[in-house]
Image (tube, rainbow, N blue to C red; front, side):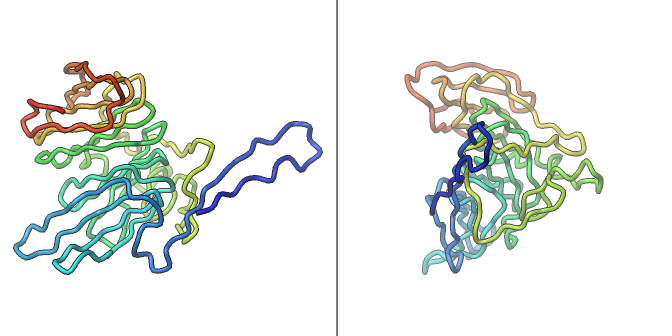
Length: 276
């Protein structure tokens, strides 16, 4: 990994040029391992006896990888490339759907058994998306939270519905690239991972779909958890309180105080009665 900075003000202008620093990650030659730290894990258990389990990893190189788990070890069987910054969290929902979030401010959905196809890019967050949570039984519901203090609850069936082929639909991803820019930009072995400037690739969701919004956080959200039925969502972050929501409506249920430092992880039991 190496950093590239701008050359400064080389023109005759008296206005100073704002320096930019970009970070590039050079992909591994065979693409079978991450080139930077791993931030998250998700496990897909086989639904058939003696079937193959899969482990999904998301890294600071902006990629997700699928690993086939056998008694002999783990083998990388696919790389998922579309994010342009750190992958911060990943969850499995709706059977074969992998959902990931990133510091590029997007949430992405993938066919987890494909060769790396991005189904859709969901753009609502205004800042880094740090965490996700999914309901075990209500498999269409996924929540996302981020540094902007936003918590969105997505109905995947509605969010991933086929897009109309119109100009309004160009804001979402159809392939492994950056969409919303007219044409897709293919990812290569040299990928921009982060920048000192904020990324602003936000568009309004097509087809009029808007996720449920849980409003209340005034600071960054770092942790989410949901009960199995998808009837209770809890969130926490730098405000040092745990907030509880009804994910079906986004309405507040309660606020739990007691923490004296930032909340980085939450665990909610299957019934939604206990949280830690």
